[in-house]
Length: 300
Image (tube, rainbow, N blue to C red; front, side, top):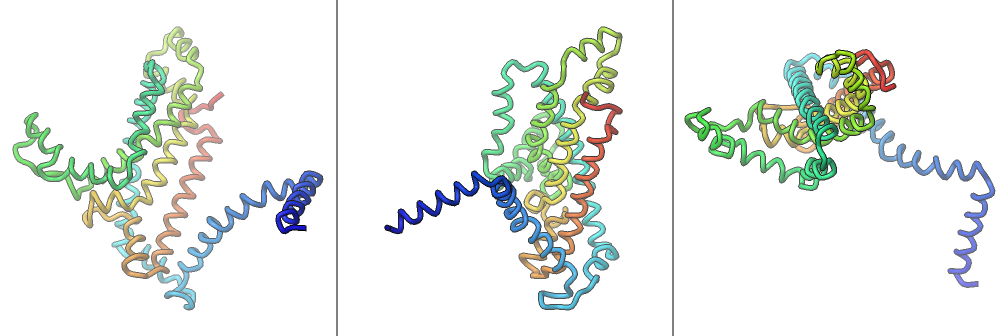
């Protein structure tokens, strides 16, 4: 018997065994994804947690000095606070703009597919290319300065590069499409007759939005907030290119610790702080979604 025939027989026997045994099918279906999850997510996270308690590169004794350094030094507290402020500000901007955009598409646009395609179009462009496009707009003498001088808002070019404003606009620009889609999905799934009923009962546009539209779409809003806040909190390319050393975020510090300083234990400790913050944010989002704490209602 040839090797090819023998291999085919082994494969057929294995397939027949899986078809006849329910536990084998269940193990195959669950085991492969679980192995990928453990290999590429759980083990790296545990390794990072273990390394964050090492005093130096392994082998080295365990210590808490990295966490003490993070939470007792003004430098890293300032960086974490600036990162949190930029994350909150960019998330608020994205949520407001994204919700208005999604609402306009869902309620008034007759070419929703084309408009959504235009929104997702920037994601087809390389991230770095988009950042350099923003640099050309924000730099001194760039597009923004030219427009401001033409409309009389400025007398000479100054640019907003390497500033808090540049990073804030960059983060909002990058993550706006990501939040628009869950907003649009929740708005299109909402029963429009409820809005008409609210208006028929005498509620104005603002009251209808706060008492009907927002509660009915709260899960989409929470999903959008989580999708924006998590990557914004860990961003390092956007602040590095648009803010330079003037707007240092925690993602930049982590990248420096691993790539430049080769202080992997301290970088791991900073990474664990970010991870805990992200987990808390996801837990808060889940709690709000399950408990109906936003605007006092549920999707039903």
